[in-house]
Image (cartoon, rainbow, N blue to C red):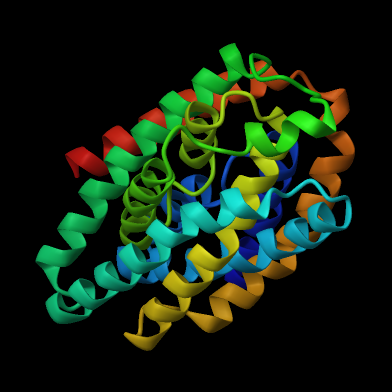
Length: 263
């Protein structure tokens, strides 16, 4: 019975991700902890690889359509991946199953969910603020930050947050990119965010696997449900009011974040 429940959970999260673009980590991790009683370190580690595999397909599709600005991805990864490795080392030294470490993870996860809720609501209200199209000759200039250190620094913060909580590479990443590259079209911002999430969540997920924080059978069941769920979500995306769904999601994420902080 649990096997079908995990597959259905993967399908439901994949459907919402396909509909809204909200990162799976902000939904899957609290669902695994509260809905199925999975220990936080296992939920986070498993979800990181879940995110890496699901977003890899999206990255391949976006790359084929030439929507990814690879210099933007590289600058973010220059900060996020090293920060991820340092955070993994600290987690290994502390012990991921240590009660104190688990308390840090759940509290940080709660804060990350509140930030994601705010970012999701911001996208619902201001999601059309970024330009949808830009002249090709202006594209290279739009893909440059005010200073090269800014995406590296913000990337390091996101890398640390994602490694501890599995949350942050989605909605928070999009908001950061919107602030750093305000002239970049929204479609290219989302594409860069998805592409950046792949190496980050893959490195973080494999790092968690090396310290025993990944449930491989659980991962397989979640992916079995999420892949068709994402496909269906993308099909239904244009028929569903985006702002309504994002507003409801922000309330749900805020509730989960508060619950994690207060447990």
